[in-house]
Amino acid sequence: MAINRKVQTLDEFTIQQLRNFPNATGELSGLLRDIGLAAKRVNVEVNKAGLVDILGDAGTINVQGEAVKKLDVYANDQFAGVLQHGISCAGIASEELDEILVFDDEISNNSKYVCLFDPLDGSSNIDVNVAIGTIFSVLPRVTPKGTPVTAADFLQKGIKQIAAGYVIYGSSTILVYATRRGVNGFTLDPSIGEFTLSHPDIQCPPTGKIYSVNHGNYFQYQQAVQQYISACQQKNEATGGPYTQRYIGSMVSDIHRNLIKGGIFMYPSITNRPEGKLRLLYECNPFAFIVEIAGGKATDGNRRILEIQPKAIHEHTPFFVGSKNMMEELEGYLK
Ligand code: AHM
Image 1: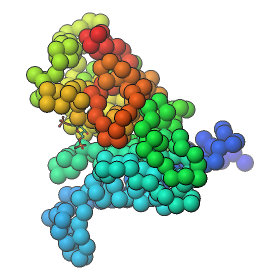
Image 2 (image 1 turned 90 degrees about the horizontal axis):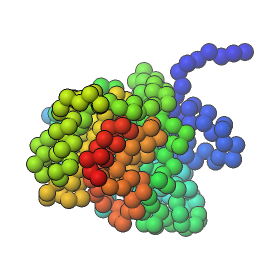
Image 3 (image 1 turned 180 degrees about the vertical axis):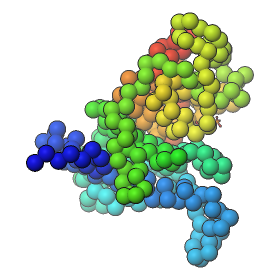
């Protein structure tokens, strides 16, 4: 009997993908399910952020007598907790943790993957109801199974990522993840509490009309970046300019929009931050992977992001990412 049901949940989708790999263990599907679960819990709390006067400020005791955590700490605890309780992740690195967290138990030591994440990116926007997000990266361990993971498992080039993704807590809550097979987006259906496939096979348009950069830092950018920004603002037959400037200041939302509509996002080095603001391992690498799989490009201005050998868990990098043709135009200025 042919069953005609169009809605596909995240779990159904990842399990269906497994059918293409008869030898797959299902660990990645398990990891993505765990991430989806943590995201749903974080989503509930993010939606309550505006109720802070009622529920209590971070650091205080709420009406139920519970200590109220900052949302980014809460988000970190949720992701760390589900990954530790799951069976697919041997350890984590997080923007909220100074050091890697090794899940040193018998099951975790035999897990294939480590996960790096920014639990709540753009968290300074929480107070003003702007969309914020979670970013994650999945790497295969390089140390032998059966032993606790070490920093070497985390300090790998982005090209080694098995999967990467993000969640936007916005007008709707969307989880997007990429593997080498493609990029797919799932919107949370609150009526059933499940992420359901809403954006299959996302492709980044090769060109677009949006550039996203913090103009307040303009005079701190290197000259070539300033020249490119000026070109974005001018009439340009070749590229269809002038472009539109859109900058939310919440990278997950800015890059998600540009990924869908076509555009370029830049966080260049600035005078007092020559390494830029954004973190290589859990902010730039995941987006570079996603956008490249979708057909776009990502660099630090000189090198492909995914080929940078990381030296430290929290290292920064300048970041340029977006539609292929717009990135190539930028590269012409940076040469
Ligand atoms: P955060 O780690 O404090 O959340 O900062 C990361 C955010 C990104 O989401 C965003 O692109 C960038 O910081 C905005 O920075 P700026 O205000 O300097 O433009």
